[in-house]
Image (tube, rainbow, N blue to C red; front, side, top):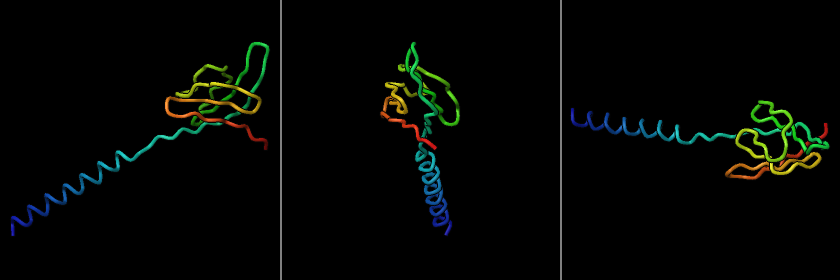
Length: 94
């Protein structure tokens, strides 16, 4: 009887440890990028981008916003890339 109880406690502790470990591994970070505006000026093209609620203001092509590099700016459209993906941000009218 005592041996069965010890085996049952051992197996349940392994199952409990396995569920907590898998719950910690399955989390995934997602960024929220918003294009606020674009502008063309004499001294360059600028984009106003917001990342995860943090405002980065006006940035030129080639600058970084968080972990994303601004590759190309067109009127109402910006292409950004990180080491894992390339995104196209488009401005929508209200």
